[in-house]
Image (cartoon, rainbow, N blue to C red; front, top):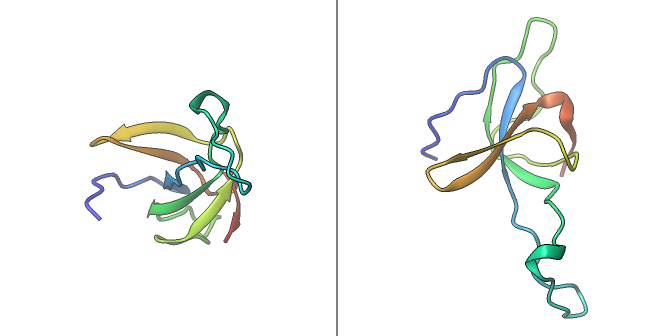
Length: 91
């Protein structure tokens, strides 16, 4: 991956997974009704702190809070940068 961002201390960079366009029954969801994704792929991990060892690693699929992290856009791709504590689970 060509991501030139290295998060500091206990932060991670996540690439959100695109929201579904269609429900299981086939109903198409309009853009205005889509929910913000809460699942993504970890693309970069900081080194942690002396009191906090990092649990996630690059390539992990994770679940995070709906309003967690700070959005950033690099080379046309959307990413989130957040503390590892904001990640709820590894899936």
